[in-house]
Length: 252
Length: 309
Image (cartoon, rainbow over all chains, first blue to last red; front, side, top):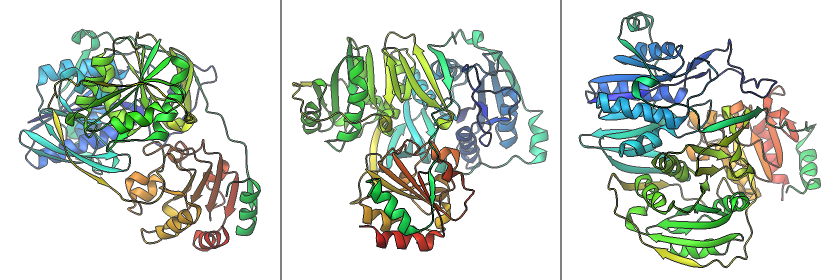
């Protein structure tokens, strides 16, 4: 079985986000970028499937700016076999919407015929939580979102999902799209020899036009602002004072 | 202009709070028709009809809709989409599973976690874990939206909307339900609770989380946890408050042993009153707290539990 894993280049998890003063967006120039953390978990899961003999090839795809090839090299260093870079934007500030990403991925799925697509549940930049579900809709495939456990068993997979109030287990027909949640696994670090080896792994470069997909946005960004700040509070000296303040505020 | 609103139905029951909050957000967009879908949904439909601002309720009952599997639920919504300009739902895990699928089937973008309505096509939504708020204008003919419930007040009761039962198409048969593992609890539900008491890594162990639970029970509160506490195995994931967990906005939020990582703040900073108890006075949680107490939680929390009430 071939596994396809889409990965996104996003602002690094630990970088403090700065909104540009002119309201045009978040400043991404000269900021550390990394693989979306949920996508790392998807890559890791694909590698574990391969190690367990359930997958034989892992293809990683990234859609965005040319620099996303660094993200693909990271995935290759972790253990993916080959990569496809779809250049769809010139400016690092251009975010390709999930619908357009899903359309390009659907074309790649037609070409590559994977048995499984493993994706992060959401990207930590636009927080849309949509690409996997949209791809699944376009392909007419089954979907298992927010997975915290995955067991692929021949023509179906058992997916345990993180839902409000607990966990839900569903059985999905293969081929399927699975989006992964935090507790599925802990991604490995790429070792130095593997980082060196990854440089020689195949990376195909394409454009959105190669797939005939229009990536122009459906959502026009009017403005981007800092969230309203909370007014500073007070520090109390004791539990008694805290109880008094809470009673005064009518909170308890 | 008309709005189709997917009600939050779990096990045949309406989640009134989440649904009523979405109704309150949707009212500004047009006449609201609520869709109650499930293996059994009639009672949920009757309950939804009482929410103020609902003009009509559609009830769809079929085994394939029983556990809100995305494929069957999305197919049903798409079959009803004609005549509605907005198709909306509260941003629950169920709706986040279903609505992007609906959007793609309609060839439109989804607007996830919308926190503000500017006009019929312009909406505000948090991005970057709540570190920025983006205003976007949709160019699509139909808008598919999930509303972040914590930023809208629940619509009241007093409605008496007509209820109509509708037929359900063939089950796409792509997935089937196996089991639910829902923690049984007498505590209020986290996202609708008036008070939430959350513990972080500072609590130190699963056993010591009992301190948090005791304080919560004294206050009649729901229990939450930071991602660090969940990752450390002190608390189950469905307690997680934050960008990767649940977003809450109770009247009172008590953060115990929580440093206040950005991703946690994103999940609770809209709370009316925030209390932070932490022994590290430099902890960022104090920057958003209305009342901060720099103290050892192992002494302060039992004392607080005793002195309250």
